[in-house]
Length: 263
Ligand SMILES: NC(=O)c1ccc[n+]([C@@H]2O[C@H](COP(=O)([O-])OP(=O)(O)OC[C@H]3O[C@@H](n4cnc5c(N)ncnc54)[C@H](OP(=O)(O)O)[C@@H]3O)[C@@H](O)[C@H]2O)c1
Image (cartoon, rainbow, N blue to C red):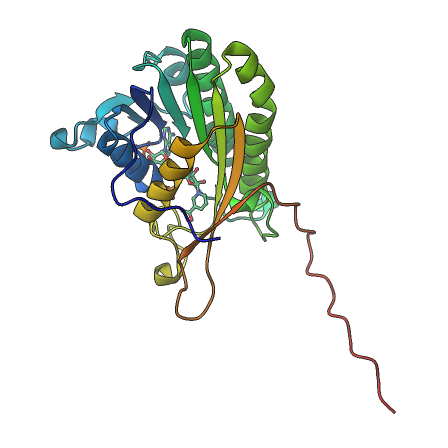
């Protein structure tokens, strides 16, 4: 299915604000700028929030998701009704036995514990409606190598928000959740040290537009969307949108079926 597109960004409906957890760089920054373009007062959380350019109209707030004290004390007052975007993350490609205890703890805080505790505070304070947009990953269901911790945490993120739907619905009938599983994005900082062809990966600005088009058009309580990059010759890196969850791939490629021998 080709992605939805809009020449002018659709209005954000009754929503007044957006809070982007990890909105300082990469996809989060593109999502934050697109939120502002849609007229939303946009709060951007991250460690480098203080370095955002003044003229972009974003409202910066320092947050270190790896520091429990920072997560406990940062302001969760956001303009309401609001979109909340769970985007922050970092990548780790390493066999588990080579991963230090500190790396396990920090990545778990960044990708899971920190955002969960932040959301717990924010949702408890917010009357609603709240529309939570979660950026998980196709790594939550795809076969990968030397990425078990990253993939496990991304699957946990996706599973958490699916199971948050009934509680959110009970809290406010117009609460919504959008779960996005993107494939590879052309964000070199995320893939530090890896030799990748960024020309064949998706443009984060384009993906951000697609995410906002899906979220602003969403009527049901929950939508799960895959945004994967095309591998077709000539259109490598073009985003391809499909709806619904994917079954996890088995850990090894299925053995090729050998053709029947002819004698
Ligand atoms: N890039 C890809 O190919 C890809 C594919 C699928 C899914 N994703 C997911 O998309 C999301 C965004 O990734 P990206 O590619 O845009 O990466 P990125 O450019 O490296 O951005 C990561 C964001 O997370 C924030 N962050 C990192 N550590 C933090 C901390 N300790 N506390 C608070 N915020 C922190 C960063 O802000 P500060 O540095 O200011 O703290 C930054 O805004 C991630 O969840 C990632 O798993 C990425």
